[in-house]
Image (cartoon, rainbow, N blue to C red; front, side, top):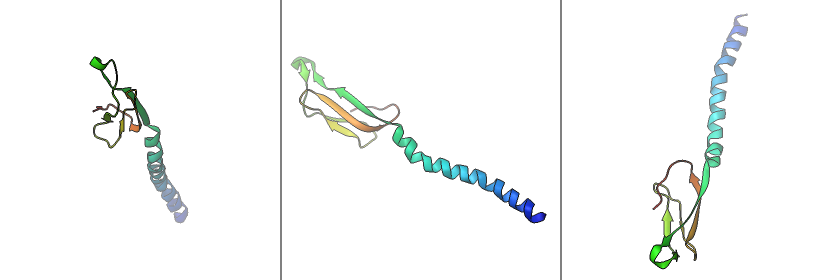
Length: 86
């Protein structure tokens, strides 16, 4: 009888640990889902058009892209949240 009670207590103690491991295993997948794409346009008012070859970066990350011939850029895998573009 004492062994049965011990097994029940042991099973209850492992449930929170199992839940924590499950949550930790899901973190990489959740962070991937929370990334997005930042797109924009770089222009010079005096030229009345887009600027080609301008490097656009997301501050605090390694994410960057160069503008194309029309001045457009697209940066993928940008983490969710507020960012400064430089």
